[in-house]
Image (cartoon, rainbow, N blue to C red; front, side, top):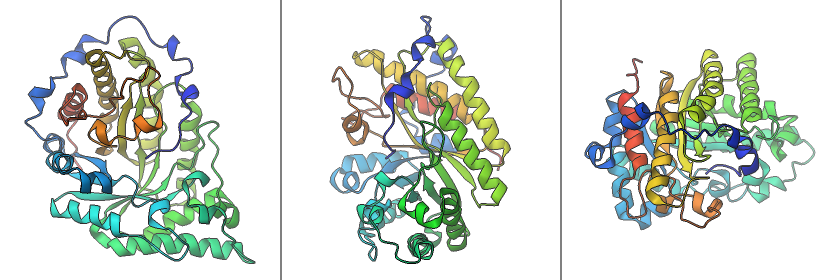
Length: 385
């Protein structure tokens, strides 16, 4: 689950981008209806292009909603735990770990032939660290104690799972979207800075899991208001390369936010800065992973048919641009169905119409967004690696 977003920053100046013309007919025409694509599992559509498709899955959804679990098993070739590997859930005290819920998710995935990613080894913001760590007394040798705490955590997790997990979000959301600076935490203060802390996390993960893809994960996006966030992430990635920090990929969360019905001019205005960002990332040699795709249907009418179509078209436009990069290998949603999405509880619509942010509705029926994702995967360039 991502961190708190600043809604005002995300929608500022959006009105100037939205034109009255409908979205380019070619974009809408290329998107088949849900009934036409439901027969082919999304994991199979992706595999034909040598991509992987998956979703986040919570312990609660897995254990209390068998119909949803069955949907995930049919559609997905890749999983990530929604919360169960984060410090707040996995590390209840400085000396104990609680592995049972993540173990259950991993075991279920393996039993169904589904690969599982690790998310995450360090969410570098104070509000997403456990209370005990924010108040921790690092003693007379704070650097040494902070190093011990962080390396013990990463070593314990990665060595427990060994080669069962082949990709980790090592660090999550270290860049402040307001100004592009790096967050400080109790760990980074004790270790003498944020960059040394993040570097230590990645070096520790590389030593403990040399087989694994190591990812920096963040929610910079293509909507208005993300310029400072994208710039800060680029500076961080440049610093990793300059210092020889072993980071393999950028996790592009892809929590999309509509600004009304998408139009051709609107999409074109977003595409330029987004391509420039992805160009810069890939030119540094990073792989791309879409890690947390969903859509907040902001500034769209309550009418379900109109709203769903707007979400689908916006999703398709975004994925067409992003999947054009051959460095992108995986696409994961942050939940497959509306009844297991975090968005309703985090940011309800102002008109109180239920959010519809995922591929399937609350009855587990496919929506136009599902067709949009299928079509984008089906037309993506075939990966050759």
